[in-house]
Image (cartoon, rainbow, N blue to C red):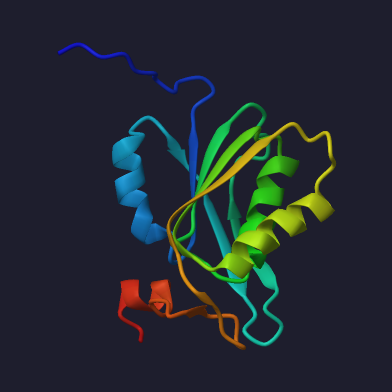
Length: 159
């Protein structure tokens, strides 16, 4: 049976796992997009203030016209993902899809609010968040309830 499809070629798509938990999604994503380049973004949330901090940036400086796929398994408070998306838009990415396995409603709302507050209205980028499930809520420590725990700890056995 014949079918029609599209090939993403130029500029080359970029897959960006947010370290360390996003690495667990990288193999599957590169199977879907075998021609994609991979960049890495190390971000951590301060558990006291819940604010994100960048500790590693291995992304191209110019992402003009690039389709970017951000891999972050847990979207809790939204601070890390919003900061990552803003960084990509600031570098010129115009089509960004964030792929999350699990999200909290507060995190989805926060991403939208923070990007509305921090991005120029004429940035021209298309931003999407795709998630497999939206859990009930966040607890007082910014963790998803009922949730799955820390994805990075589960992935690397450091529970």
